[in-house]
Length: 348
Image (cartoon, rainbow, N blue to C red; front, side):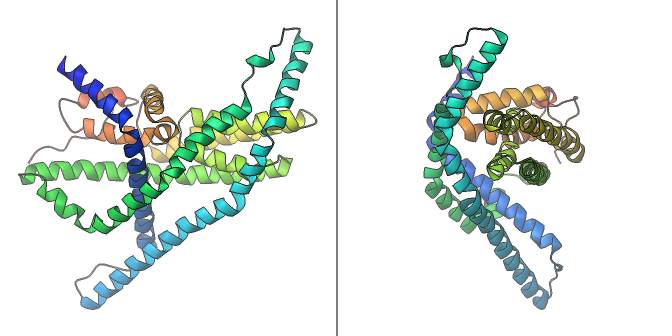
């Protein structure tokens, strides 16, 4: 009974505190992502740790270079979005009323061809759907000021994180156990983000090339949507393929372009999302598809689009934590795809 009360209180707290927790989660994700990129740059830079004073100076120099390279990478992505993708979104939104009219005409055509009574009110309102999604994104965008404040303080205080973390625990055994859990989450998360971002980026680029070749308008927008929605399991692939297919179906003069759009995008999703990605991630994300779907719906209901975007990283963290304690290992087994879960670090 107490467990049910605690769980209900936790859900209520997550829902009521979403205006604070979502910006904090986004800030943590961006802070973590930038550190992960910086770590990658440090790996490719030619330096070695040494107690020599001269090498320490080189070490700090290469660290500074990696941070600058990370910042340039992030700013480059933001610049690309603002100058190339955002104007396309504006043009597409301006066309939504026209697309709604064509959707009704298409429904009428199908109704007359098949002989089924058609009701225009039964069709989804593209403008309303886009407005709702835009409102969700706008709510996140308006909180970016708070996100940047959180990030600044995280970067300022990250040099003391290890010292604070060690001071949290009364014994070295507890500290080592907690450090092992954090390191496991860090390893799994970095591998997930690296593989997911790489696969999503390649899928987005190839989608852009394919859509450009067959003459689909707003190819940059659809490619950007393919990249972003790849982080959302199951539903993301449906959205990434469905939107450009529906668009080409409404505006193309014949069925050739919609068919080619469907073939190309679905093939890319199958090859990269269903074949290559699981092969590269291996046992890192040994998570049940049903668990991922339930988790997606749960966080989507609580936090909307932001919850769906971060649902898998949060599930990875829960999975790793549950695997490290005897009382929660059965939960980790249920969350896993085949019953194989991470080894438990024995207390020393």
